[in-house]
Amino acid sequence: MTRLAVTDVAYASYELFKVIVGSDDLTDEDWEAARHAIRGSFQDNIDDPSFAPYVGEPKEILKFLDYHLGLHGAGEDHGPSIGFALDASIVQSGGRPDPVIVECLRNFNCASPSFVKGLRLVMDPGCTVRIRGDAIRFIALISDQWFNSTVPVMEPEEMTQFCEHLAAYMVDDGPRLLLTRKRFFSILLGMLRSPEWRGHIVTRTWSLLADWTLIEEEHESFQWCLQNAIELLEFTKKLPDGEGFRWWYGTLWFHFEKLDPTVKGEVESIAKDMDMSSGNGTSDLKLYHNLLGQEVEKVRRELDGFTEVDRLSSSGMKLRSRFVNLEGTWHRLGRITGRQ
Image (tube, rainbow, N blue to C red; front, side):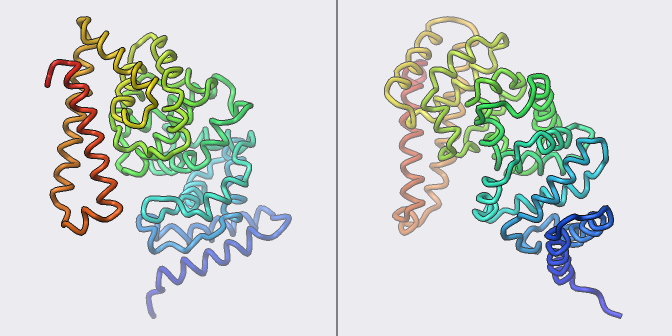
């Protein structure tokens, strides 16, 4: 007797899975076999993707996922199988999605009614925390298909429910994975970009924007939001609770150097008006100033730990530029608030 090597079994199971799902006219028995095969492929490696099979082009995974999301939307519970497929679809390399997978997702219809309904139901708080986290990271990869579409993929009441379930996960369950928190911003910024979606954002998710350092500045949706920052300021000003404006405006201070001159002027003008008035405005400006100061010190300590060679590297120069920009913004806001 000998113990089977888990990695060998996983790779063999994945090859079997691709053969089964790659066939035409699959029967119920074929799909049952596929469910066993995908479990054998990823169950023992689910906490350490480095030991999982290399997925490559995930066309069989997406076919399997599409089928089971349809069943899930029709009332059948296939949560574990959907979880394995989602996990396989978001295999990460250094925190970034595999380009092969991203390209395949771009060419796959992730906005079909059955696909959308199944993923929306997967986000229900009754599903496991793990599957919901995987769903968030997957949706972030297909955010353009959902949030940058001329035709909304959901009805208004479904958008509201989805946003409530997103808030339930991000606020109530407190995702442990840094990667999930980063991917959440891809979804939130995609919603902000969409006139149809932005009005459904749940109040308690706005404060998550305080985690400004997790926003990926090169993301297309974020670039759009910065270029249309005044439009979003006007939108958030009209929200009844004030949270949307509070945290979107703070985001603009944290990324001040990325703004064009017109937006910079508007941001400073708002700050001067807030500082002259009493109430929450002044305390918010002090909060932004404190958070900026904390980030300045964090980057300073990181730079202090660099060797001279590190400082001259491309990553070192990039960090130095970030430090200079943050410190400049911190001083600028400090002068407005009278703290410097």
